[in-house]
Image (cartoon, rainbow, N blue to C red):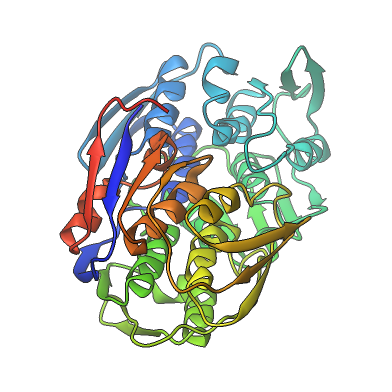
Length: 422
């Protein structure tokens, strides 16, 4: 397995272009199942998760070709609406084929995604919504079988128990071909959901209210292929914002929607960083001591759970004590032992971490356990004294496109070491 070798101490300066959003691209690629023909998606990041989704769609008979940031899908009728365990186990987002398959073909068989390193993430809300729309659900030997007895879903009001992102996306994609109106109440409000709605509407759907907690979908008989450029990745942008601040840097991030980063920017400003909208992007400047701030993750528009690990590194170097509460996932502090090995002072009690600022971190060999934990360890390596080796960077390759090249372009001393043992 590859690793990253980082020599800390360099101040990040310069500019970079933020890649397309992985969490927007994945449900949008699945939407190609809703309409036969030639789909083109631009600004698609070259990531492991995108490749996995492409493989899954190809097992169903679609043709998927990615050339740089352009990904073309030739969609045709699916003979076997099945998502096998071999691919779903690699990436939980594979479950996003469920809604489009049931909508288009009246049935689907999808492997249950189970849990992952950051905690269990069940799909009960997905299934509850499909049942409300007339589907029958059976669980058998690790697979969920969904079938619509009358052949086509029927619009319904679905009140979600919690604002689940993938659940909202699956039900939106199912409802666009249902008969009648579907209303999703307590829907997730993330920008990626708004992006999916934009794509579905370009395909001929009628989705309103995306970005609020009530989404209304008027079903259509059929949809058309689409050409769409994927929005910028707000989590990638937030990660580089923190890296710039942690190294006392001055970095401009191009192509970012600042409104998507308000919650992160607010906490960074409280910590003493300058974070400002500039042109079509964001500039981050950090000078002087950082201040400790408390953080509590929450569904959008609150502070994103996907930025919790990165902000924790910033708090490690801040003056004073900060408290970080994780409300979304029950096991998302797996980066803490690795940060403590580098000299951090962090204690965890349940879903709350207490961070006492330290003067410096020391380079060490650390193990990445999940995608965002990987990013936090890379940031820690950038500001640590000496050399840090981050093992198992295949996690980071799932969600960050060429992170070592982008950081090196800002002045970091970082290299990928191929084939390192974990």
